[in-house]
Each structure stands twice: as structure tokens, then as C-alpha cells.
Length: 154
Length: 175
Image 1 (cartoon, rainbow over the protein chains, first blue to last red):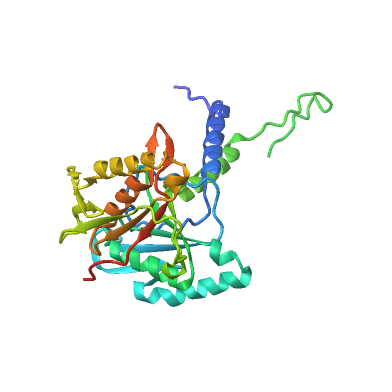
Image 2 (image 1 turned 45 degrees about the vertical axis):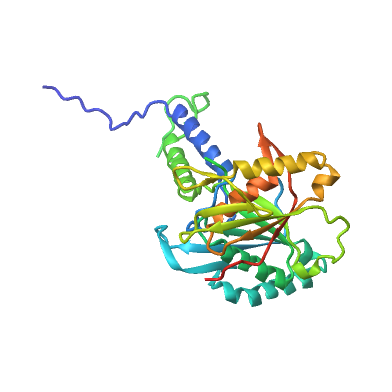
């Protein structure tokens, strides 16, 4: 057999179509990428409501309080804690932290605390009394506007 | 290295520079992988906005002592809803398979009250106030459902506000 010495040349074919599709994918992900760390702890199963609507504009000056009653695997645990400003505290320890936030906002602007919203993300199975206590703590610290988070019906 | 065919054509138009697609594809795949790895699906969450000034801050004289309705939600030991009563009258409620109560009758009652005052959005309706007295143990999802039933109605995508003034009474039973 006469083996022809072929040049070691690869012929990948026309790659243009492949690149087009890949650019489409990149554009898709670039549009959707969200670098903001939305304060949404994954251990919380929000209650469902029909009436919730996603806020159209982003509200300024918010403090998010997350009532966590589950562990990472979403099993219920006895210790209920509130995740606030990156720290996990018990409900009774909330007041000093909230007062600090209140004062910090006040220094920024006299009217800021009155217009600040406390966003409460609590698990659907949490005792309502605990949520009420959180609201009371926030009211004692001086906050007046509250936003209870829920998710849409699937 | 790419050598030009210099034998004949030093000034000819055969000097096409071929674009090497392979490195381009490599980089593009790198970018794509980066975006896929950092892609994070964040569920959209909705809000219920309630204005709740501290109880002490509320003005003592209220112009119209119109009908603040007291809605009492009683929980059983497991935190599920045991009974609802409005101004002392018990309301019936159904429970579906997932143990989620149906607040239909409550919703109808509130609707009727709002209609009686002049319809949603009217001055009379806006002055209606509801006080919620909820057991400590009651699971939060029931509270949210009750608030949904009271504060608005959703018809075909449009949300009409019913009761805008909501108050929580201090928790009844501490464990």
C-alpha cells in the first residue's frame, strides 16, 4: 500500500455558526447576571400569598430581618434566630442592633429613619408571635414602615 | 509560522490573513463557562407593605370610631388554625389537603364591609381599621393568608385594596 503522507492539517469545518450560538448564550447570561447579593437566605421557606407584587422600584434605606427556623437541609430546628446585617442573633438581642441602625440612619439624614422600611422575611412555619415580637422590637427602635415578604403562588 | 508565498507574488492580492477561529472559540467558551458558573437564579419575591407606627404614637382621639374590626385567630397545639372569629362571631373556614385554611368567608365578610362603606378606595373604606389578635403559636403562613384575605382582592391581574389600616394586638399567649 502506498501510504500518502498527508499533511497534519485539521479541518474543523466552518465554525462561524458555532460562534454565533455561543455569543447568543453569552449575551443571555450577561443580561441575566445579577451581582447584587440580595439578602435572601435559602433556609427560609416564605409563605405564599396571591396578593404579593414585586416592588416596581427599589426602595432605599431598608433593613432586612430574616427569621430562620430551619437548618441548611430545611429541617426544622428548635433554635430560632434572626439574621440581621450578616449576624445571627436571637430575637431578644435585636433591639440594640436596631437602635444602632436607627441612629446610623438618623446621622445620615433626619428623615431617613421614618422612611426606612424593615423587610421581614420569615419562614411560613414560624410562630406568628415571634414575628410580632420582631415587629415590636423594630417599633421600639423607632421604625414605622414594614414590609412582609411572601412569594407568589406557583 | 505562516510564511508568505514569496516566490511569485510579493505584490499580489493573495495576502489574506486568515483569522484563526480556534483561539477565539477557546476564549468564548471560557467566558461562557464563567457566566454559567456565576449565574444565580434569584426568585422574585413580593412584599406586603404595612405602616405600623408604634402603638404609643397613635393619636388618642380618633375622629370616627367606625368599626375597628377585631379578628381573632386561634391556633391549635401544632400551630394550625383552630378558629377564626370576627368581632366575637365565629367564622367557618375550610382546610385543604396541605392543611392550608381557606379564608374565603373572611374575605367575603371584609368585601361586604368595604362595599357597605362605599366601595374600595372610598373614604369610608379607607377609614376601616382591623385589629388582628393572633395566637403566638399560629404558623406565620396562616397570618399572611389572613392578611391577604383582608387587605386586597385580585381580579384578573389587578389588585384592589380593601383594608389599608392593619394593627397587630400584642401576642395573646406566650409559651
